[in-house]
Length: 327
Image (tube, rainbow, N blue to C red; front, side):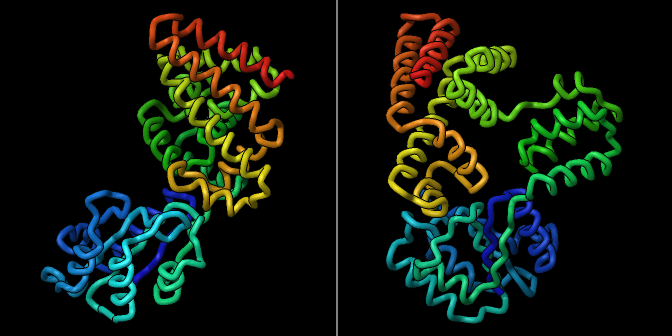
């Protein structure tokens, strides 16, 4: 049976896939488990379909995994011949091979013929991001399973830094196991990485709220982690460009799902991230975001040309940006 697995929680999606593969071919059968990346320039649909029709290697079954199936969304498509061949293949019943179509977002375009066909003839599994309370309980259980105790302030900080990301949570817990079984707030602050995307969001939010003190504090915290000002400005620029797009789409009357379909191709945006950006977009206008982006581009050019000190110049940019949203 061919299967479509999609959703905006990558960790659970991969867990679901691993469980299904194990049930079909076993855990270590690399000869009968083949991965393809639909987003790769070298990907060949013909090669995948030819592989699907060859017999398994000393086994009753084989599994083909097609990752990054953006062709199931709006704005991205397969070549006409590839789509025709895939749809013809899906009409068959190949008992010796299962194809897993993976898409780590929830922005499927159910009006596209290829999407409708796959959802019609394949088993469909939707993997949803955990709700805030469910994620909190998951995190507590994860720590308990690894016999890690945290003081209440330590857990709150750890929870905040995980930003509802299960993959990062598992990685950080594995790291904390090596440190000790009882952790205080100072331990979490010293050992656990902050999510950079979250920090850039909070910095932009502080600027829009004219909280220059908070914006400077976040920036200086990043500098203590040895982050280059130009690298951090690149993250801010990416966040601002996405905010500008969201603000423009909101002005044009787009709904949430329409925004996700339009933006997901290059931005890896999901409902959770879009809601955060919409909160910011409600506080401003596209022309103001564009003005701040232009100021950031000017800083970037001056810093790279050596016309201004990188650290001092970025602080001047923050002051200028906070004034833009003050008018």
